Length: 251
Ligand code: NAD
Image 1 (cartoon, protein in one colour):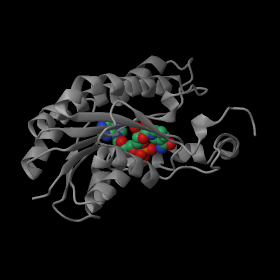
Image 2: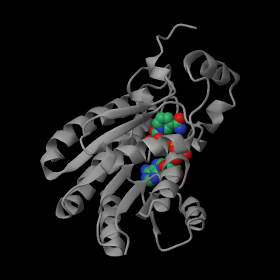
Image 3: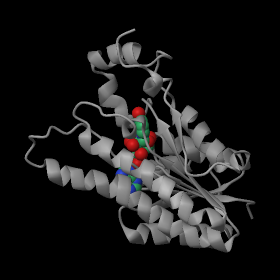
């Protein structure tokens, strides 16, 4: 039996995958949740053990939330941490005919999915005497970006949802925080990274002059989930190489 367990959503790729590797290496039992069944299978082959349990599901559906919390209890007997990381993005021209449908989907995954995640894991954490929830927000929730209004809105929403949820659950010893990555080198940003203007923008906008790595964002998530962060709740830890600290003008 493991000493602690974690549910991680968006576990098959990028930051979620780096979280699975980090938490598993530190002895956690992991419920790895993703829509991508093939990606989950590839992942489970790596820390090949009963320590990482896959769950194929869509975080915007309540049954996925119920199933992931129950699976943690069934397999590991407890639930200590939830990393609510699944998210989708993509720029969205205002004039696109399906813009509002795509807004609905972005909000369903990035906002509704987080609300479902929080509601689903709280009862098991409360029964166990407390826990920690970390939501993957984004620097895009702290500033506007051209063409990114739907994603910007969704990530701003979860940053403030985390504040309010932290108030509601503090007395139950459940800490709730967010991490706001800047630009991270993951499949989500693969297409963006090949655009020449994006390389130029990294040099112009990011003081550290490089993309972040998924493991660097997983490390920030790990910190907020760990006992080292025992007096931190309702906050957003920005991990963006200085992107949002920058004054915006060309250096
Ligand atoms: P990614 O695309 O590499 O991984 C996201 C994973 O989430 C995928 O495996 C995907 O299948 C899964 N997923 C998507 N929708 C889902 C759903 N409805 N239910 C279950 N799983 C679903 O992306 P990433 O870059 O690792 O992003 C992870 C999180 O970090 C997201 O919330 C994203 O918004 C945020 N983020 C990423 C960056 C970046 O630059 N990559 C920057 C800031 C914030």
